Length: 230
Image 1: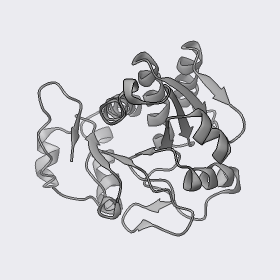
Image 2 (image 1 turned 30 degrees about the horizontal axis):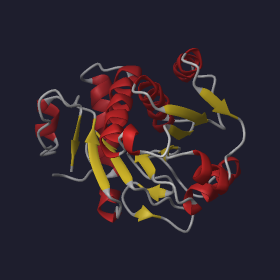
Image 3 (image 1 turned 90 degrees about the horizontal axis):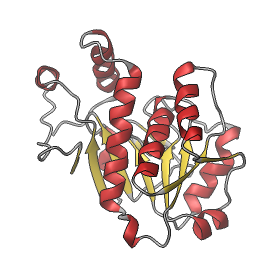
Image 4 (image 1 turned 90 degrees about the vertical axis):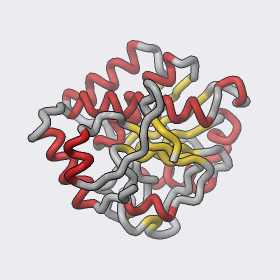
């Protein structure tokens, strides 16, 4: 299976939008759904100390995936709580936020401390930074990043663990070490540095012609599954 460079990941996204005419919100919905399913497979709600899941959301597409994931987790019986420190005026994100609010999903204004995360939540979803992240971490995200680095609560990172370079992996001490990595489209080069327990591929939406063009060699999804364990 091919591991994508940053340029290849960007090119594939652009082809999906321009050549295959997918919309951003369409792909985001499929990605967020596959993330929720991956999480449910790894952290069955009946085996957790409680159903509380902290969703840490950034301002980009990775954050949009997190908002969609939160909505689907709520429908599966989990209790997502969203920390979204940098909201934007982009209508897509406003709509995703509105959908979560209409489902009575709680948003918290302040970054939860290490103790709050460990005492309150069974899982954290890291949807802060995607493959366009460039250091350093902005001050607005310092507190939550420090908490996620120190917490004992397992973390599920969407596509790229926050604080990682898409190709070179963890950049410095401000990098998260997730228990679950959910790669989207195809795993990125940084995934070879992943040391966690679970690695899933999500987003069953890549046309076969595009898979062949980039020699992705993606694994087969079983039955009607929208995610697959790697």
